[in-house]
Image (cartoon, rainbow, N blue to C red; front, top):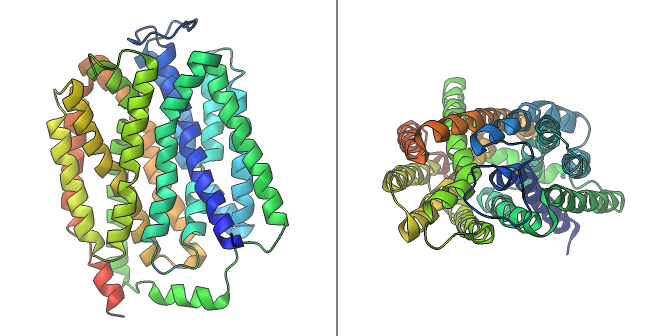
Length: 408
C-alpha cells in the first residue's frame, strides 16, 4: 500500500470515529431513559430522566462540533493539516474515555462537549486532505463518506451491545481507547515519511486549473445555496440519525422488542443507506450537481411524507429509503465547495460550511426533545418533508457546475 493510500485509510478511519463517538450518547440516552420500551438486563436510570429530559445534555457537544471547526481549520492551515488529524484521534479518544467516568448528567454533558470540541477538527481538515491534489472529488468524498456513515450505523449497534454486556460506561471507554490507539499509530506513520498533507506544485497547478472562476456575485450565490441547503440538510440528517433508534423503539412493533434487535435494525438501515454516497459521488463527477441534488431532495420529501403514520415492516422499508437519500445528499455540498474553493483556503471554506451544519445540528437536539415530548415523531416527519422541499427549490438556482468544468 502506498503512503498516499495509507493516509487515505487513516482519514477514512477518522471519519468513522468522528461520527461513531459523537453518537454514543444518543443510544445511551435511549437505554438509560426511564420511559424506554426496550428491556436491558441490569440497566437502571439512577438519574431518573426521561428520553426527552436526557438528550438536551448533548446540546453543548453538538454546538462545539460545529463552532470549533473554524479555529481547527485556521490552526491546520497555519500549522499542519496532518498534525491536526493526529490531535483529533488522540483528543477525541481521551474525551470519550473521560465520559465513562461521569457521575452526573452534567458531567456526562461536559464530556460530550469535549468530544464535540475534538470532533470539530475532522470535517474541515480531513475533507480538505481527502480532496487535496484531486480534480474529480466525488468518489473520494463518497468513499470517505461511507466510512463516516458506517460510524453512524455502528454507533447504536455497538453501543447497545456494550451496554448490555459491560454497562454504559464501557460503551464510551472501549471505542475511545481504540480511537486513541489509532491516533498513536497515525503519529508513528507521520514520523516515518514526508507529510502527506503537502502536495507537489504540479498537482496543485492541475487542481487549481479545474477550479471554477466565478464572478463575485455568482460565487456568493453558490456559497449561499451551499450554506442554506447544508443548514436544512443538517437538521434532517441529525434528526434521522439521532432519533432512528428511538423511532424504531416506537415504530417497529412486533419484531423489534429488545435492545439488540433495535440496534441491529438501526445498523442495517444505516449501513445500507451509507452506500448511496458512492452512487451520488460517482454521478456528480459525471453529471450536473444541480440535477443530482434536485433528484435527491425531491426523493427525501416523498419518503418523509410516506413515513408519517407507518409502523412495522412498512416503516422499516420506508426508513431505508429515506436514509438512502439523506446520506446521499452529504457529498454533494462538499463537491460544490471543492469546485469553487482554491486549495489554500479550502479548509476554511469547509469549516464555514460545517459550522453552519453543526450549529443547526446542535439546535436540532433540543428541538427534537420538544417535538417528541409534545407530538411524537409524526410532526418531525412533516417538518423534514417541508425542509426537503425547500432544498429542492433552492437547488434549482445553482449553475451547471459540471458543464462549466467540461467547457474549460
